[in-house]
Length: 296
Image 1 (cartoon, helix red, strand yellow):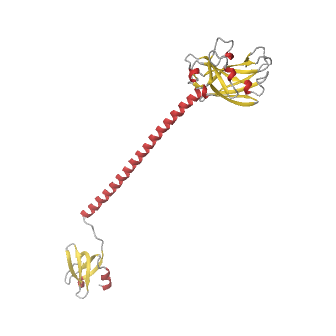
Image 2 (tube, rainbow, N blue to C red):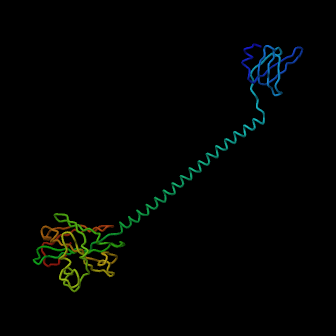
Image 3 (spheres, one colour):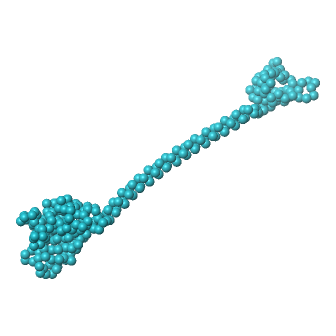
């Protein structure tokens, strides 16, 4: 057996075939080759039977071999592998449960937020669509010469199903050559006085010589409550179901011409804070036969 070959196998698990002189059969020893002593002519091998020596002269073959694991070792390794696989599966399962829980929480929160926003938007939309002011008629009041319409009285009411309308938050537009925007003068809100000859003579306060129409200006309009059983118009400027009021506009102050001339057109809108605005578009007749003029 060559020395270099034997030395390369030191420390390796080997299969060694030996045959003693005079023996008919060879024997096989399997173990780890620990050392080779050429001087004394033997090798040191660690086999299953223990640590022992073999004479080099009896060795007829030697080669590396695979170390066979014991049954118990194989079983232990298999069980360990199964345990590791089981732990990995458990970790993956827990991760999936956590992800599903987080996703469910996000979906629930999102659905609640969307539901709340949808309800808010729906309520606002219903209020926006159902609320509003309706114009029933427009009446003019001329000067003494019956040459110009100096004042307009626009009769308004809340739309059907509308909530209360705050007249102090309404804006009134007047379009005739120029566009004017008017707001309510809260000191010019009074119940109609049936003792007077006309609503246009309604005083600011009972017994006062000053009228609502006479104190309106190019910036502000007044209000005369025609039907206000609960007094909401005169106390809080709020119109509720069944109420009716006249919006008084001083055209002599708003228009550069000092009033609306015959055959001339005037238009505008009355817009509440929330809800549908009311529009008016009327044309003065060619001749004013009376001071009270119904406009279409």
